[in-house]
Length: 437
Image (cartoon, rainbow, N blue to C red; front, side, top):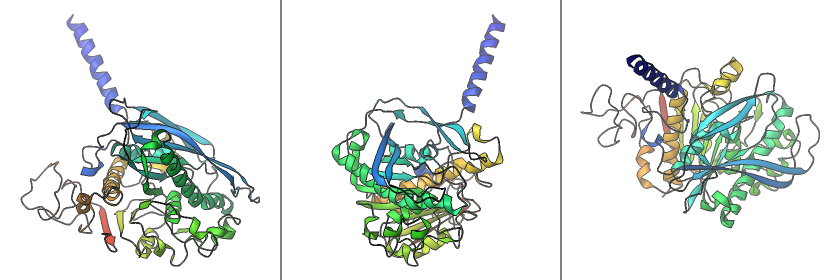
């Protein structure tokens, strides 16, 4: 009997260790995450739709002339679900391997597929992935925001799997990202007004754009950033009507836009200039820029900092992860993507823990969207008046050692509001422009 009890106890311990080793959903932050990274009060639902835009031009990578065809975009929608909905799903997707063929992997999630949405009206967020990425690898943000009362629409842009280094490969994503984001936003708003599925809970008059890398380029363009005229011929004429001096430039806009978040957006694509000289000055929605100081893909200064400096017509913020590279917005590398350097390098940073990168971004994105989309003035203390260097600041008479409490911000503390005192190094946060009334 004692031997049997020991065996059962051993099996229980083994199962517990196995469960502990199972990866958690990246939308759920760790215990050392900043305050606003925590999940919100809503269960999370997820649904899939297809948006179709008729007779669209797409410059193919073979260099042939674009021909009109229907543009079909699969979209994943995360939304606040009704009380009592279950949780847990597994997302299955793939990224191009070194040979161009897809490498399949899975990502654990918290959402319940096709669960009933909460009755109400929630801000609409368009979440745009980077080149050759997929919506699933941004599930950390889509699910987290849905739990906080946002309807998040993430299109799959179906970029070519070949390398982006050639002009032929660049042409399609450069042409379509701005146009696709504007279309997806308009179509999601139309379906929200029509009361379709989970989009019935979205408020089309309170829309935000979030984009990573190539998606950040598209988000800035859809927010009013003026594109360089050279992108007309570079996209084999597809963007010609929409560049800075194009006849349809005004059509490249999103109605009801309240805020923009761009993570590692390019100012140039290698030697190709993407923006008109004053291109950022036409963006009027409050904008949060996020970047790693060692981003060797889009650059830092010059690079993302240049875009931040030039967005002179709006209140804007710049969050910098010191020594981080470009891969700051994808989930941590799944087990299937740890077998080669190429696959791992899609996901992991050389310096920063991935869960830390995502938690800090979630904290600031939550504060920013709550402040400028929901109009929650209590979030201002998480954004405005911060000392630029996260390592600076003090909290007199605060507990020492392994203290898990969050800084309350001024006047009691000049440590960044919502950060644990021992978890604040390595960051810069800057703000420019007038705060909207």
